[in-house]
Image (tube, rainbow, N blue to C red):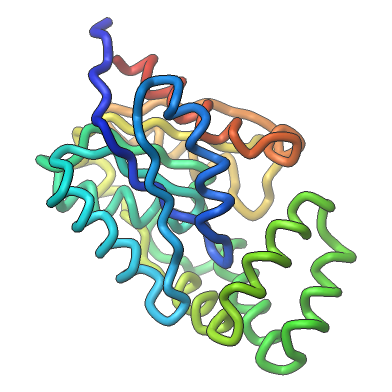
Length: 234
């Protein structure tokens, strides 16, 4: 197996309703260990996907070949951008992919749509309180912070994410770049079956499995899992 040559910079993208703070803690520790500088993108809740793509465009212009990656929709946007700009990408880190192709029937898309409707109907404080009561403490803390940051545009951001068309099987099959995937075995919102489909369809991918509790104890396990998968690819 060839030893991997890492780009100098990685651009990492948060998941739906999340923020750069979480993305940085998820990826930076593992990337530091292989000498890569992490640029975590703060989403524009009025134009989430465009803000992600613009950040990757700028980084590629400034730094040449980059790593790209993200969590959930961030992983999908990073992989889609990589498929369109393969000459600018040294690898992709896909943590907790949520769906393939159309978001129809995807649990993550349904959750985002429902949350957006509740926010529009009842406001941030009430919906945050309900989310906190029904979520693991670590997740409640993360979302309470990032939701406040994106309010009052949060419902629009959630609806945009829920409508996003991720790379479909034909697109996945055409991506020759190395892709390290991380998935939780017990995550109903980001099903392991999706990650396995990506790993099986992408020509040059590897998958690391972990548990949701691991992420709660240390978000950095997501980056470690992706970097470990990329290292196995070589």
